[in-house]
Length: 258
Image (cartoon, rainbow, N blue to C red):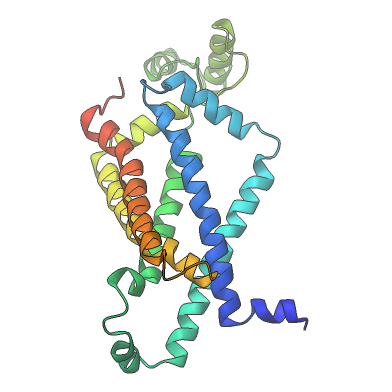
């Protein structure tokens, strides 16, 4: 086994992997949040958001990008679990409590738990938006489809009628109305509250994770360690609030999305 491969299998190597992938995911959160702000009319609105989403999903690189992102998530999760297991195996619980007393924080001690909650939320998030209800711009309305069913048209005939209707109104290309899916999902106040709660938990996770990554990679220094901790906390709050804005707005302030 090469020295490079051996390092990856050490606890330090796993911590480095966890830190690097964590920072990569942090970068993803930034771009994802920026794109989501197009949901607001003052910044973009329905058409701008749908065009943005369509440009992403029709990009020929989208599949390798999604595979790469999934790989980063998996490496981050597996590394975190193995580091946690190694830590518990090497240091009994009683000793750990005494040794870390006054040094660790609630955030640092609950990283695996908050990470697990975030993973569960991610699965729900993908099921809701990526694989959720699919509407397309220019489609027949739900009421129009109901009327066609009442007239005796089969589902296949309704699909054909829908395609013709979309083309007749200048929408020959199928562009998903993801805006509608988002709005309808957040109109469910229970889901919106769950979303906000998970974003707060994500903030707790980021508050420790960001500064811990710098420490693991040897980028900390007594002169600016405190500054990194403050920046970590500020960024965690910004992300928690930033992502919570959408369920709050579409779930409680403007639940009909109009």
